[in-house]
Amino acid sequence: MTDTRDHIKPLTYLFEDDGLVPNNALPLVVYKRAIEVPRTDPARSIEELFGRNGWGQLWRDGVFDFQHYHATVHEALGVARGHALVLFGGERGEAVQLGIGDVAILPAGTGHKSLFASHDFQVVGAYPPGDTMQVTRPTPDSYRRALQTIPQVPVPASDPVFGEAGPLTRLWR
Image 1 (cartoon, rainbow, N blue to C red):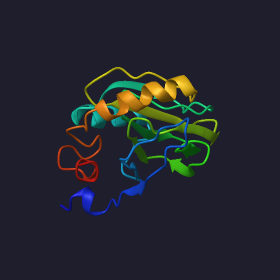
Image 2 (cartoon, helix red, strand yellow):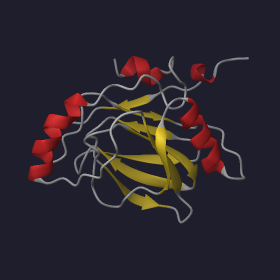
Image 3 (cartoon, helix red, strand yellow):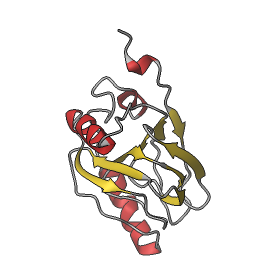
Image 4 (tube, rainbow, N blue to C red):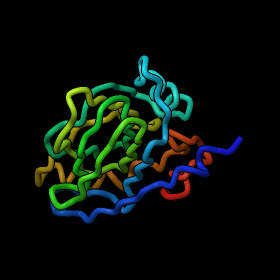
């Protein structure tokens, strides 16, 4: 049997600090069609996969339609249903189309917001072990605090999709 990692080529995006959204020196990683999701309860299959690979604090919802980032944690977003156009990297970032089975892995500080989502769009969010997620809006005060916390966020020990030997562990070292 061929390892799925052989067929999944991660897309990577680097974003500059824009003065309000700090972003990160680590790249945003997107796996297109990385997860085969069943028709019944697709979110559960993503939750189980993320959980097996050590990513927790799981939730199901969409992506906020306002610019925000997380200054104390990295985040994985696995698409269970529908599709969306998500702007990553702040207002001058890049819009990325996400669909069923896609996974986006955001290093701490990466700006993101939904520009459009289908009515059935659902993602599963998860975080590696560590601090609790906090939604941070881009303001001068939160930006100054984030510049202090983001460098302290440890690189995760595992990839939320492919585990300890996954592409993320190489891309973020």
